[in-house]
View 1 (cartoon, rainbow, N blue to C red):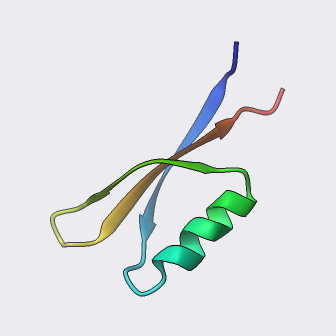
View 2: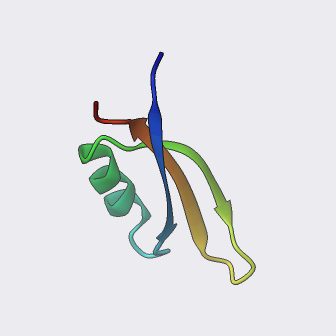
View 3: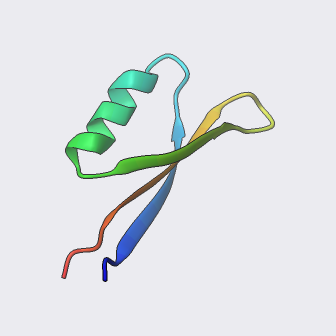
Length: 51
């Protein structure tokens, strides 16, 4: 059974693609993204936990 680790990260509005690609290079998969009350983006990410 897979075990996961999770990360919640703010995503700057001027650099969304670069930030998400950098997370992807580190093995993070985007699970969900939403706007906060101030209009910024919050990314919810997961990746397999190292054994």
